[in-house]
Length: 148
View (cartoon, rainbow, N blue to C red):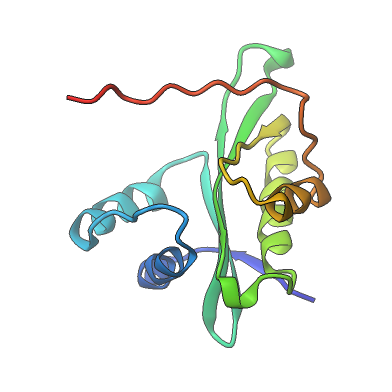
């Protein structure tokens, strides 16, 4: 059984290596990444989960929770930065980190957890659906920062 855990301060290098292998998005430069990592570790309402195999981080996801004046005051959550090393997909690592994030969200009394995917691979969408996410419950909108 694959188990997820919360990150610790020493995990930054392993996470950057994972992100580079996953081709999800470009990571921050190392000096900037160290500053961002300290902010992540200190921020309330932000939790990063990882799954290890042979002492190597092979999967991760980030849960962001926020207070909410609506929904009876129950928080809401957002799942971000879900990534599993291509060599370790299909072994339960992605499912483990997502399940850990959702368990934490329910513990934090979130009424829902939202996530978006820009991936076109149908396997990615089947994975999220197998983790309990239901497409079409909400309509997602995004706006990007205008070019300078």
